[in-house]
Amino acid sequence: MKVKNKQIFIPLAALLLLALFNLAMDPSFFKISLGNNSAGDPVLTGYLMTILDYGSEVAILAIGMTLVTAACGGQDISVGAAVAIAGSVILRVLVGQGGDGTLQAPIIVAFLIACVVAMLFGAFNGVLVAIFNIQPMVATLILYTAGRSIAAWINNNELPIVTDQTFTYFGGFIPGIPVPTPFFLAVVCVVLILLALKFTNLGLYTQAVGINASSSRLNGLNPTFIKWLSFVILGLCVAVVGLIKTSRLSTINYSVIAKDIEMDAILAVALGGNALSGGKFNIMASILGAYVIQFLTTTLYKFNVSSDALPAYKAVVVIILVVISAPAVKDKLAAYGKKWKKQKEVG
Image (cartoon, rainbow, N blue to C red; front, side, top):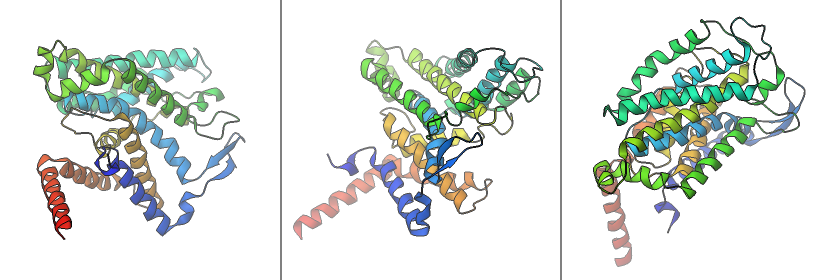
């Protein structure tokens, strides 16, 4: 099968276009150098390392968003607010209320509690979608609206700061390792989901429910549980990103943390060639799409595009992807392709 007929062709083509654009405009974009971070440890720096670093957050969320999209035919727009909640829980467990910044509990305990909380909020969204049949974007609008207020309430609207240096490793660098830690966390998440898809029927069941929930029920599946489970898995991904986000600054800003990250996650799924209406999906295409989105974001920042204008550029990309993935457009392109091929054979 030719590459152009494979689902991963779209993100690969987008990556190539961005790479060629940056190569033509400024070849130094691809320069990677060895420097030192604030702690004095040697680290790799450059635009590509920034893409690898921040793109990993989107890649982790894209895993759960892909499953939600495939199973439910809709997207979760509350992940940014949920990240704020998970991060707030981590800080509350680590330093307590009004603490001096020293660790009151092990980091792993705080993370596991955040996982439980994030999965509970994911389960709440899943109940609204799977049991009450509310459209995913409408159902998750509740948490999207209230999530950051909940995050602020958890810490009494205070901004706790963790003074322990080891906490910064999760969103920065582990001493002696020059590659950003978020990349390794993303690799772990990708490996786990690939193992789950390989050794369980999660992928098959998710696709079956997304394609036709009624038919899957007649074949012995439980569409309600599969849809609910996809939101719970997304909640687990949210907790990991919450750890990374709060670790970067050792504190939290409830109104800014993970702002608009849900759009990047959704766009990564779309850029990966996955149908936003549900059904068949490709996790690796979504992962690649996530890094392409960060590639685009970093490129726009490099050329001094205002952060307020970034959503507009990404919205244009979403529109283009949605139009291209529309069945009518696909049929037209296929018809033109056959016609061109036929003319070439005749000629």
